[in-house]
Amino acid sequence: MRCPFTGWDRAVAATTATKGVNLRDKLEGNELDLSLSDLSEVPVKELAALPKATVLDLSCNNLAALPSDFCSLTHLVKLDLSKNQLQQLPSDFGRLVNLQHLDLLNNRLVTLPVSFAQLKNLKWLDLKDNPLDPTLAKVAGDCLDEKQCKQAAVRVLQYMKAIQSEQDRERQRRLQAERELEKKREAEQRKREAQERELRRREKAEEKERRRREYDALRAVKQELETQRKKESTESPKLSSASRPSKLPQRRRSWSQALLRLLLMLLLCALCTLAVCRMTELQRQPLCVSVNTLFEDVVTAVQSHKTLQNMLHRNSQQ
Image (cartoon, rainbow, N blue to C red):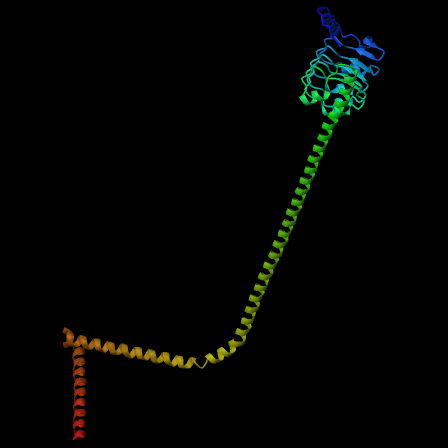
């Protein structure tokens, strides 16, 4: 299809677009021709109100993209989008399940959406003059006549179905991997929970055993104390009866020690008095004179006693 854009045609198209002509006026039977209308957007709402328009011509406009709700026009059977500036089709383009004829000549398409594989009724396809991916371009081939365009539709649908199947398999693999990973995480979680329960059970058992040992030890100590108390209570009368006779010798011993200390003190006082009376100027005092006289008499008596003993000893030897 050719789009002879002359200056006059552009002016008319611009005037028509700005005036907002009713689409019903352009509808002829089931065909709606909006080509050469200088459209930059598709009037989806107005098109949805015309379900009879199963053939739509949007060629030779300035469409850079199709709105997402464009795919709600499921009544379309033939669609011409050639000679626009489309860089991509909506991801859900496959919703146009009744589409049989699709012209995408001379756009800027590189790839097609995967949902394109759902266009099971597509019989005719033209993808010429697009910067297609080399693989897709080879699959589509040329659309120079009716036969080639029909073959392009079949081959492209098969190619897109293969891509969709591969993506589905990849998605299934990811889902399976995610499910296995989730199962593994759940198993690990259950294992951790079981280990924690076992640890808590062991700690409780150890704590119970510790309290039992403490209770047994405390009970043993109480029994030991009770046994010792009973033993002391039975032995205390014997000890009291045995300790009574020993008090008398202890008292006698204490009196003897006191008397001995008194005699020693008297002897010490006598010696001190004697030393004072014989070695100091107090020896002329009456008391000291008596003491000195008594001391001399005692010494004389002791010497006489020794002399007598010597004499007796000599006589016994003769």
